[in-house]
Each structure stands twice: as structure tokens, then as C-alpha cells.
Amino acid sequence: MRVAMIGAGYVGLVSGACLAELGHQVVCVDKDVRKVAALKMGETPIFEPGLPELIARNVGAGRLSFTSDLSDAVKGAAAVFIAVGTPSRPADGLADLSQVYGAAREVARVIDGYTLIVTKSTVPVGTGDEITRIVADVSPNAEVAVVSNPEFLREGAAIGDFMEPDRIVVGTSDPRARALMGELYAALTNKGVTLVFTERRGAEVIKYAANAFLATKITFINEIADLCEQAGADVQEVATGIGLDHRIGPKFLQPGPGYGGSCFPKDLLALLKAGHDFGVPIRSIETIISINEQRKRAMARKIIAACGGTVRGSTIAVLGLTFKADTDDMRESPAVSIITALQDAGANVRAYDPEGMVHAKSILNGVDLAADSYACAEGAAALVVLTEWNQFRSLDFARLKQALARPLIVDLRNIYKSTDMLAHGFTYVSIGRPAVGKARAE
Ligand SMILES: NC(=O)c1ccc[n+]([C@@H]2O[C@H](COP(=O)([O-])OP(=O)(O)OC[C@H]3O[C@@H](n4cnc5c(N)ncnc54)[C@H](O)[C@@H]3O)[C@@H](O)[C@H]2O)c1
Image (cartoon, rainbow, N blue to C red; front, side):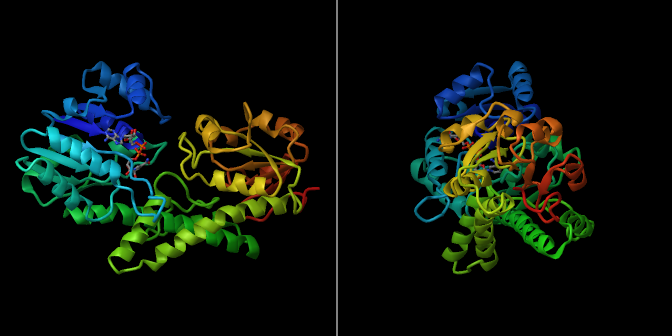
């Protein structure tokens, strides 16, 4: 099938490349001309494992191309995906749908023949209806079906998530659209992937409900971690013990500094606001948002406490800036709030991230960026792990200890074993587990 993918960001680029891999003829469109120029030159504008190779293979096979000319891509396409951004509106927290509606208007102007307009962006319930209205307004004779096909991929594991998803959700009641969407994903459903057909509004709600549930799981285990810490239990043992229950499941039970990223914070806020608009305030989501917000500054207080109650004038070394490992995405990363709180408390922050440094430069103020983990640690009063990058798991701890002004590690991702850290001679403070080493570093 001929496919146009509007928006070549984290979702559009991966989805476009994966659909090409499934055998479709895909044109990715982005209005960011520099992004398109880079893609045409064979560069991948985001960090996503396996993506450069996937793009190169499909460009080479003639199935994948890039343009900033939307009309070129849309004309003759059987399906036009909208995968543009839906950030929070600063004024009220509602999803800003201007990119989605803007793309829909542009698509409507050039559409020819029966076409699917497929929303891949995460959009509030009812957005499909509005897109239908926009298309009818701009192009009254256009033959379209507006379909919701939310995306569940995770950055860092995006290709695997797209190619082997837990399920594909397609929201439309149009039988012809259902048949075409079935054809589009046939290569996956033939391998046993479940395709769930719903009404359009159902699919729109599914995406927000799924993200809200996952954020709830993270927040829940974070609170249980706090309890463990006070009660002398180990949250990792607790997570294993509850996760083995099939009704609960082991995923998203890893305690940490609070959820962040480009999706959970904005999507929970949008769901909360949608609830208000429909007259059904979702109190649980309100609470989750508030707990998570408070947690980030609480993490800074935890670091300060581990440093003996003050960080004024001290250098704190931070490993990891992105909101999770295997991505360069810094959007809503807990690291930003934690670092800001440390700076507010008078610390000098030095940081290193394997892939996040470019974005960090434009987001963080007054942070000294180091070339690697050891340079980051040099002379610091504490080493703080904020992102669970694999390379931080296997550092040369003797070298690290020598570099630090005092042997204190605060690990907000629990990537080390307490016994190992003790054996290396560190004071080690983690989440939901008893601190080991000298209770308080001097
Ligand atoms: N990032 C994720 O992990 C993830 C996962 C699932 C769902 N989503 C959802 O997918 C959507 C996209 O997210 P993202 O992270 O890929 O965003 P992004 O900001 O990385 O990419 C969006 C792209 O769309 C382009 N764009 C905007 N308007 C355009 C137009 N009219 N024509 C052409 N290009 C246009 C922008 O230039 C940008 O490159 C959001 O709704 C998000 O909530 C994201």
C-alpha cells in the first residue's frame, strides 16, 4: 500500500520505517526542512537503536523516502498517517491539537480518491470527529475514513515494539477502513499479532487509559519503595514478589525518581482535563500527577540528606540526563527538576549522558557537561545515577572512587547491588532499600 506519514519524529519515523519494512511504499513528510535534509543525506535525526540500519535498508530497497512537500506524499496514498506532536498547552494542560488539525487541513486540500486518515498521534477522545469535520469543511467531496490507530511503542525499544506489539488497536466503524487497516498490518497479524477493532472513540480512550495505568504502576511502586525504605524492607524483593502474580505482572514495577518523558506527563494531564470537560473528574489520575510531581524534588532532598544535609558549594556529579535509557529524549526528564533543585540548594552540578548531551545543552542552565563518567566524578562530593544506561552498570569502580572527593553513590535507578557497592567501599544510597556503608558521608 502507498502510505504517507505526516511527522517524522520519534513515532512517525519509526512507524514509517517499520511500515516500509512490512513491504509498504512509505513517504515520510516533515515540515522541518533540516530534519528532511538530514534524512535524505542518510542521517538519523534521533537516537533510537536499530533505526539507522532500518531506514538505510528500506531507502535502499526503494520503499522509504522523505520530503517536506506534503501534497506530493499525500496524492495517491491509500493511507495518510498523522504522527505530529500533541504537547501540553501551557495555559491549561489540555493537549495542543494545533499540529494535528493543521496537518488534517493540509491533507484535506490535496487528498484524491478514497483515503484513510489515520491518527497515530495521541489525541483526546473526540479528536477524530473534529478531523472529520475539518476535512468535510475544507474538501466537501473528499472520500475519507478517519481512523484512530494509537501507537504504544517505547523510545529505546521502538522498533521491536512496532514489529512485535502486544496488540494493534484500530478504531473505526467503517468496514472498508477496517479491511484496509487489516491489509496494512497483515504481515504482523499473519504472525499472530492481535488486531483489536474498536469504535474510534474507544481507541482514543485506550491510549490515554493505557498510559495512565502504566504511570499509576510506576507511582505505586515508588510509594511502596518509600515505605520499604522506612520499614527496612527491600523494594526489589517486594516488586518480584508482587510481579509474579499474573494479575499484576512484573513490568513497570521498577522504582525510580518519578516518571517523565514525552508521553506520560502530558497524557495524564490531558486525560485529567478531558475528565473535567466530560464532568467526570478522574481523582486517581489527579493524585498520581501530584505524587509524581512532588517526588522529583523529594529526590533532590534525598540526595542532599545523603550528602549530610547540605550541598552548598559542593560539586554533585550526575550520571544520566535523559528520561530513561536508550533515548536522547530529554522531554520532561526527572533529571531536569532534580538538577534544578540541587542548584537551588547551592550545588554545582556536573553531568554526563551518553546520548542526551545535545538536548541537555539547550535545556539545562549552569550545568557543567563532562566528557565521560570519570570526568564527571572528578572531585565531586557525590555521584548520582539518574538514568539507567547500561554503560553505568559496568564502570571501573576503583577509578570512580579515586575520582570522587568522597565515596558516595546515590542511585535513583537501583542499577547496582548494595553488596557490590559495599565491597567497593562506597556509601551507597538507593531507592526502597537500606543504605549501606557509612550511614552519612562526611
Ligand atoms: N515519543 C513516544 O515515545 C510516543 C509514543 C507513543 C505515542 N506518541 C505520540 O505520538 C505523537 C508524536 O510524538 P513524537 O514524540 O514523535 O513527536 P515529535 O515532536 O518527535 O515529532 C513530531 C514531528 O511532526 C512534525 N510536524 C508537525 N506538524 C507537521 C505538519 N503539518 N507537517 C509535517 N510535519 C509536521 C514536526 O516537525 C516533528 O518533527 C504525539 O502525539 C505523542 O504523544 C509518542
